[in-house]
Image 1: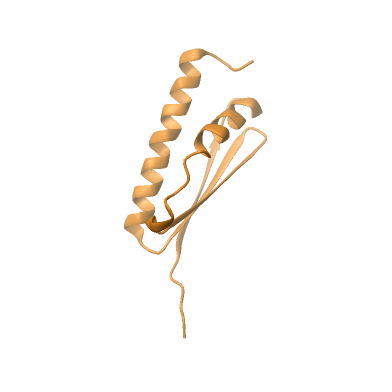
Image 2 (image 1 turned 90 degrees about the vertical axis):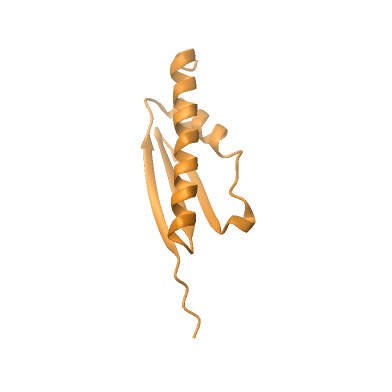
Length: 87
């Protein structure tokens, strides 16, 4: 019997506009999770919302991946704030 003990987390991140969500999606989707890291990340944007789904076999790997991703989200949003709203 093969039991799969995957852990997952879903995160929804709102943005002020669909354009901002698209910019964040394009910026964040470039960096894929390393295959040997054991974490799978799915990133989708719809309207002004960024939807992120993480799956991992270990809580530690999941935590590290989510923390790293959120650091990138903060960087992207701070950059958008610094340079003003996109055209």
